[in-house]
Image (cartoon, rainbow, N blue to C red; front, side, top):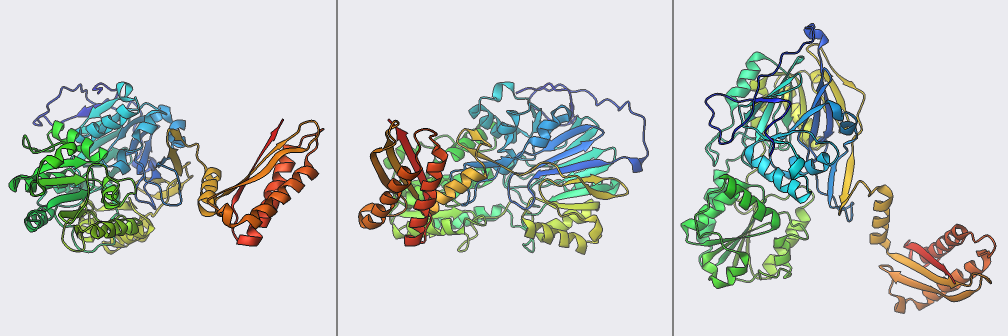
Length: 589
């Protein structure tokens, strides 16, 4: 981890820090002072608007730029084969010489998942809190980038100088420790980006959101507020995480002599801690399944965010050595992901855990929109195997890490921004949050609901939209980044929907006669043995086309293949009303 950097970090004198840092006071700008009305700050949205995930925001003033977060999102069902979706870095790469750093609000995938891919393009300093740094390091190690990355550890209350910007990190509550909001002080005024937050008065770690600091900035005057919109549709307040701990205590007692299996988000350290605490009270051992969960437990324990008594954690390979009533298994798969550990257990495909009537399964999560069906399938399959299954609708086994309406209104009320920009949400969330801001007295003309790629120019006198910047989705497929486009995806969808017909033939190069074939191979379309008449018709048509269109002098392969595709496709559609992909393979001998 690098501690030196061209920019500076200022830390309160009374803050205890376990590591050495190198600081210097930020230099005063040599530029001549300008009238406030002439100053402006630009904000470009590279991800996180009209979507949940892929968060990335760029700030610009006086030729200096910096980034807030660089996340990913997971592909929908209409993106077959795609592993991850990351932001488009085109605009960032174009302005690489102006980027002073990347500041990360917390360690969730939708905020850190794209960092490794960004650092492959431009090497900028990354500022993040202790736990977030630990999670980022794990990702960079996988990509072979750790040795050259500039990772700078920061803490809530620190001030960072990035060109003409001065940033203060403000502690917030979320479903992962070490989350911060950012107060961005610029020549144009102060912009506050909350990051993901909620107001938990009884957090697990005892460290409540620093509302006093947000109030102080509100008293001084805030130019603009960018605020988390995830739960803007939900009335009231978000429950405290401690409520889940109370539910675990009740449910663990009800489990009696059964084996307990808890599925939760891998990143929720406080949730994992409460599961471990409940297990310890009842003398149960704890095993962890799932790569992401195992990594988090390892990093969390190493950095002091998890308190695990000696002898409590056991390898998953040893669970058969313990009776069911002495076991708790923490697993991934709370969203019903097809390849997750819980899904494999539900469908009897897991190599180390077999589900039966003596299992008590708790799904400690709410299905993300779009995942409801997958979660329901997993629940049904677990029940078929005889397991007792507990999920959110039955007990309070999950609370959100995001603020509900009353908390959002409180943030608006204490910050008192001139301009308001709802972020981190789909259109329905952004609009609902905008409505809350209006109800709090912010003029509609001072509220901006944007899209990815939009860019705003903010000053003390105006908020105006200026030219858009390149944005969009970049698909990660295996080791390929950005090499899967619409054409490839359309082909995959076509194959998954209608299958493929392969036409294979060998042609004599001198005479143009067919030496073998044409053979018709069907995959994912029809069963050949039950459709011999259709296959024979296609074979005869293919032979006729090859004989009519193949010319030994010019050898126009494109004409032959196009004719084959068109004719075979027409035959198949007439008989089946389906349009398989037709792939001609012609060889010369």
